[in-house]
Every structure is written in structure tokens, then in C-alpha cells.
Length: 471
Image (cartoon, rainbow, N blue to C red; front, side, top):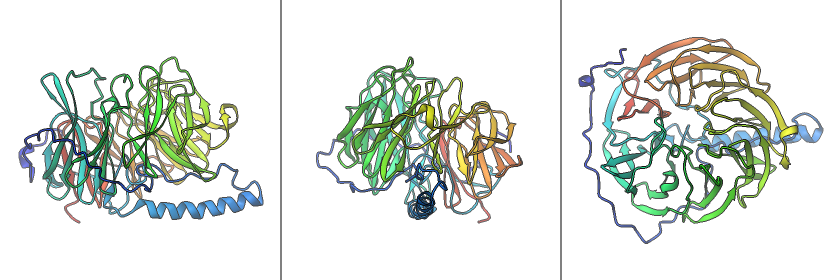
């Protein structure tokens, strides 16, 4: 279809709502359940022991494999939830009915709603409601907002100002003041606006439960990393232009639990990382990429457990897990993927780096893992399939375009969406094969959400729900 589709042919278009005034802060606390599973990141990672090196290793591998599947089955949930960045387990895998290879603005749109302001947070969808953040500039004032939109008909359920900034700060041209993706869990909506506040809202009406304005750091080019929720703890990476740190806050109250300065002094200290959670030897570890290193912190205390040194800065992709490895990108200007064996103590650079891969490595999009294959697309449109265990490349192809959104994997296909609304479907496997392409109107830097066969796609101006009309 053409990029210049006739927008008048849309089945339904919701008019822009009148922005709500700032609500009075609620002094009473609404209690979120303290014990909660990981939202937006894998629940656990395999044991750091070599799987078949000994009878003990064989037993641990088999036991862990069983535990992993039990946790996975219990954490993925139904295909009608997408509660955080890259889905229910943060791995970019899409469950539920297949979506069409080609969609259009005439046959596939259920509704489309304009979104005031600008935000590159991805949609989060829970219990039939889509949650977004946006930043609305009102002359010199910047209104930082959270929205809830009905997944059924596109109706705006609530539109809440979380915080405001009197003087609009400068950011990178590709960034927004509302880029971190909301996390939804147990009736709570957790939103993060970098140094301008982190808050918990009631999912039902958007009322503010708590807001934390104490996570103060000097951002460079704006904020980008999303919060991650695990066991009642929100973890946020705060790598600003100076004094970078990682912080954990209590999800039920917003109180700071720990704040840990970065353990490596970097020449350039800013990044836009999102943490991931791994359970190693029964201990929850925060895996946090940052300038010139990757570090693991104890979730409970914030103690630095181990680190890998690697030159680089402005790290964006989320670390992903494969067996006993964590795979991450070390640098924006000269991206390189590193596979690091989980576990150990102190500096494990010389002992735990298993493989490195520079060709086609992404600066912004997060890779996706399917079985033993790792799929990723560079910011300049080079897509690669590699062996996750060794880093050996199966194939590399240039498809063109510029990419910020992360690839998503279905049962048999891979979706790649560039910044100009051009989508490419590829077959999964060790042979490169294009299944289909299509286009939508608008800038598309946010990763879409998929729920029960429907796609929720955010552009710079709208949120649209696409479905297969033949379902």
C-alpha cells in the first residue's frame, strides 16, 4: 500500500480529548502488592555452571530446564496482556493468533486516536486498556502525561498530568520527553520521566498513588531507559552526563531502597539503558548495561556482584538471556554484541566473555532470541541471524531504512519496523526469506504491542489498532 493512504477512509477516528487539569495530589496511599513477578524482563536465567561438565552439572541443567519452563509458563500469561516494553516477559516474543503479513488503513484499522504532544514510549496493554505517556508543550511549559485508552473502541478513559516542567529542556532530535515505556501490574501503572519524576498511578482512573521526584541526575539528550519491575522493586538506570548510578525503589510506596554509583569511571558517562533481571544461584541480579561496562547488582542490597569492562557509551538495547549467557551491546557509535557468561565475582572481563560480534550490531533496537538463533537489525537496516551460543552468523542482509523499534518474533516470522512506517516480515530460520512488506503513515520509532492478534502501533501523532478482518 502507499505511504500516502487516504486517511478519510479510516473506519473510526477518535477526536482529541480536552486535556485534563492537574489533579490534587492524593495523600492516602494505595497499596500495591509487595510480591510481584518480573514485568518486562525474563524471570530467570540458567545456571552459570557448564551444563554437562559433571553429574552435578547434568542434574542442575535438567532441574533448571524444568524450572525455567515452569516459570515461563506461569509468567507469560494470556495473549491479552502486553504489560511492558517488548511484551509480558520482555523478550520480544508474541503469543496468540497470527497477525496478517500485510495490513492497510482501509481493511485492517479498528480505530485510530490522535495523541497530543510527543512520546516514544511503547504501548502497554493490560485488561483491555492501552497505556501510554506523552509530553505536551504548552508555550514554555512542558506537561508530562499518562493516558489510558480503551482497546475496544479507542475511547480515552483518562488523561493525567503526572508532572510539569516550566522550561522545556533540549533533547536529541530522535528522542522525546516521554520515551520510557510504562509498566503495568496488579492495578498499578508505573511511569518514568527520567529526572522529572517516577510515579505510580491507579490503572482504573489515573489517580496518583505516589510520585518520586528525588531521582535527580543530569540527563544527556533526554531520558530513554524504561523501568523494570521485579518482586515489588522498580529498578531504573540513571546514566546522565555526570555521576551515573542505578537506583531501586519500592513499588508500593515509591521510597528509595538503594542507590549505587557506577563501579567504572567512564570518559563519557551517559547512556539510555534498561536493566534486565537474571536469577543466578537463587539470587536475583540486576543486569545493567552502561558506559564502558556491564554490571550485575544484587536486587535486594544493590551490591555490585560482577562486571565486564568494554569501551563504549550511550548504550540503548536491553540485555537478553540465552542459557547461561547474557548478550548485550557495548557502544552506540561502534556497536558490538558481547555474550557474557553469567555469574562470578568482581571483574570477570578476562574469564567470562564468550563471543563478540560487530558486523551488523544494533545501536538502538534490542535483538530477539528464538530457539538457538539470535535476530537483530542495525540502525541502518542490516538484519542478521546468528547462532546465540557461538556468535556465528547464519546470514546478513541489507533491507534499508533507519531503525529504532525493536524486532518482534512470532511462531514463524519476524517483524521489522523502520522509522518511516515501512514494515518487513521475514521467515524465521537459517535461510533469509522475505514474507511480505507494507507501509503506514507517520514516524515509527516506538516498538508496537501485540495482543490477541491485534497490533497497537504508535506513530508521532497517533495510536492505531490493526486487526485481521478475516478472524
